[in-house]
Length: 150
Image 1 (tube, rainbow, N blue to C red):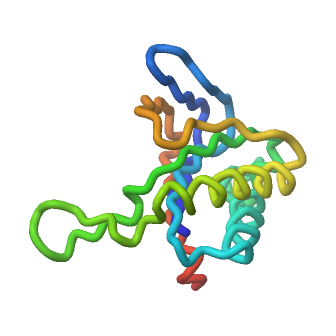
Image 2 (image 1 turned 180 degrees about the vertical axis):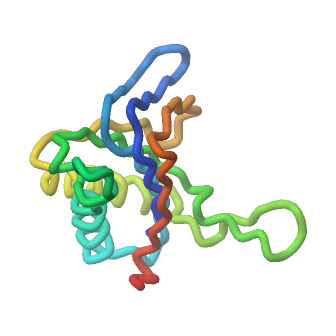
């Protein structure tokens, strides 16, 4: 599982001209899944994201998590996080989970993040053509891969 996390002052997902989800201060999480992802990957990632200290404290140091700032999270599925670009100019997505596997992983991940956060999270819609808008605060953008836990 791979995620790109962006600290935001606001973010939204629009589908076919209608805003599906929006948040203020918090995290926009783009999440990509592989066939090999396990519940352990999802649980580890959910805890990592919610407890990641990337919000600034009173001393302007990144010491606070989304929990500490009572922030929200919006999760958007993004298979392109598994793009392979080693050969040629057209990305390959053979490592991205197919919908029959990815949808249950996505739904379980949403549940686990909400459980860690202590409230519901906002989402995009799996497989939809989404327009994602955000104001990246900082900017702070972090990539995490559950298979590379360094």
